[in-house]
Image (tube, rainbow, N blue to C red; front, side, top):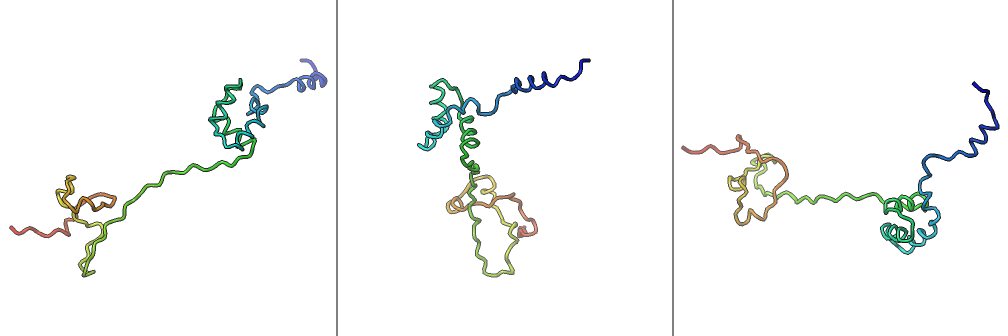
Length: 142
């Protein structure tokens, strides 16, 4: 084994190039062009198409990353669509002592099948299971 040669090690360090080029290295020459297009409110897609037409093939994702990192643009968080929930139907009860438990809402067989009649079609249902409360049902007269 040969001894360590400092001169050849320094030469190797000077000639060293990383295997993978730095991120956005190919877009750095077009930094002013991209910045000017963004001040004119050009989309990432439009910038990518323009640069591709002028011999710098790139994607809109690469342009977006370049603008966020190199130009310091703010990354807006994605918005999740909000789910609209219809309000639960209001039931008026004269005597609070006779009020059924909120989960003990009786459902007619026609509603359980999916059929509706007149005013019932306009009422909105609450979310959750439709389970009959046996203790709340009136016994049949036989």
